Image 1 (cartoon, rainbow, N blue to C red):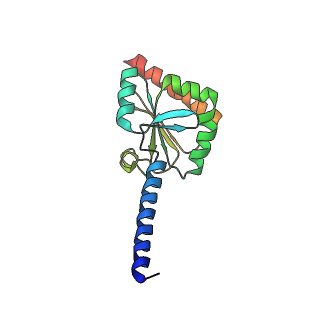
Image 2 (tube, one colour):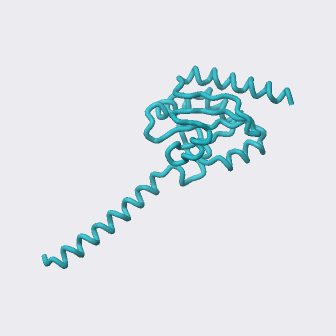
Image 3 (cartoon, rainbow, N blue to C red):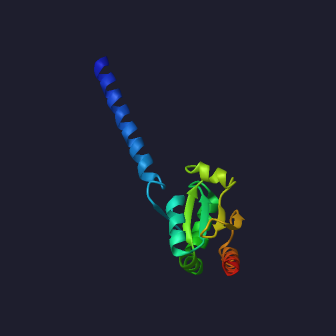
Length: 159
C-alpha cells in the first residue's frame, strides 16, 4: 500500500469515527425529546412546558434532579418511581419535570442543587413547598408525598 493510499484510508476512517461518535451522542441523549421515562413515570425534560402545564391543570410541580451516572438516582427510579402507589399519586396530583444536572446546569445552579437525587416541590405559581435532598426508599418517599399534598392543600385553602 502506498503512503498516499494509507493517508486516504486513515482520513476516511477518521471521518467514519467522527460520524459514529456524533450519531452515538445524539441517539443516547435524554434531553433531545420533550419527555423522559424514569421508572414507570413520564417526566417533562424542560421547565417551561412543565410550568405551563402546571398552571393550566392547577397542579403543583415535582421537580426531580438527576444524572445518568448517579447510582442513587437509578435506585430511586427503579424502586420509588416503579411503585404503583407512588405512580398513581404522582400522575394524579403533580406535573413532573426531570432535570439532568450536567446537561441543564443553569437550572441546578439557580435552585442551589448540588447533589443527586434531589427533589423540589412547587405550587403551580412557583412557590416552593418542600425539598428532599438525597435518596429515599419508596415508603419514605410516599410519606413525604402525602406531606407535600397536605401542605399544598393548606396553601390553597389560605388563598
